[in-house]
Length: 513
Image 1 (tube, rainbow, N blue to C red):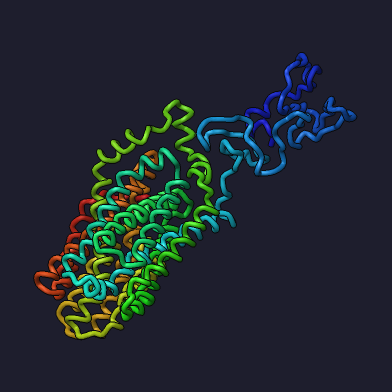
Image 2: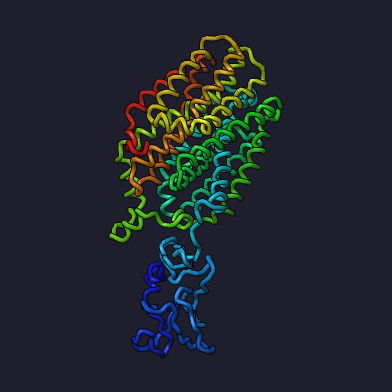
């Protein structure tokens, strides 16, 4: 294969300063960065005179281009500088060897997919989702001690969910603009910074208004990280498997956290739990900064083929306002966003209020907080063990099947007065709810055009994450008026809502299922 096929710059013949080319073209007085001789179809080698203050050199036809001593480019390494300066990061293309790799404006190549570099990138995003799960499940065992410490009602305690929801909505609206303005790396790192600030406020139990406001900051941070991580993984090969693992790690974080927060719930200084959360958030921030180095998505993964084609045809990407307008006009995006809102709200309502229900209605002790671990443990397992079953059933039938069985189990929690029976049923509900989120993201990536996928997935993830605040708040208000025993019927109603909403969501292309 000739090098001219790898990059157009290699198609021109070698022209040493002041000399004629091997093909008989006149000499050039301008200094060139590099050039390459075309070999004759009858000869496999060419002798190429290079005036470099050194003897004439013979160069194999298949070797890299000749570089003169004043060239600003050092070939032979993947970290070489780009030949052009300026422009958006990721917009400069230069050959970096046999693969014709795309370099950004700082000379950094994309990662090599399927190898060690992709694993490192995924590991960093997995830890981000571990923190997301940790964050969502931490408050469940702390609700009752929080109420006693501040001497407030369950309705007032539930305001923490409202402020968290406000944060998620801000992140949902701002995500597209931030991504367009600053790129993937800076936006996800900004989210990690917000998360650290929130935990730094919560760990000393400030006055309740400030404690509530910290949940706005936490919602913004978690919303941005969740949106960026989902949109990034959606671009990778074998997306469904990787998305399943990504959200399995979310479930693992949600499973681990109650083991720790339950211990702190027994202590007068229950808010010291947020010191542990702060430590996890600092590790997450350092990981994102070190692995991604504030780079854009195209700088890390390379320009998507659809974007390359659009750029070649003169149809560059829309600005953030135009992209957001298109997303807001797409009906399917809103259907999936509301489905995700119900789904995330359902899992966090169960994980958050189930502990209070089992203590006050089923006569459990403070150790009932560990049941929340069982629920999120099932959630984690379901996202891994049902991958093959999801493929066999198809995405639509899988959701219908899991929802129907989960409804049956939730009736057991509602009507069977057994602490152990409720605990087991809740764990299996988690197992069945596990595959929902990866399936949602898989379908969205199939039905939306590439130009809208990043922003749409970000919007769906952020808006949906708002469910983790909105529905637990509604449950708290109802529990304050009618008692915690309202939790099972609320969960049943949400499951029915999921079933109905899934009926109206568009189907993915049949060949993809």
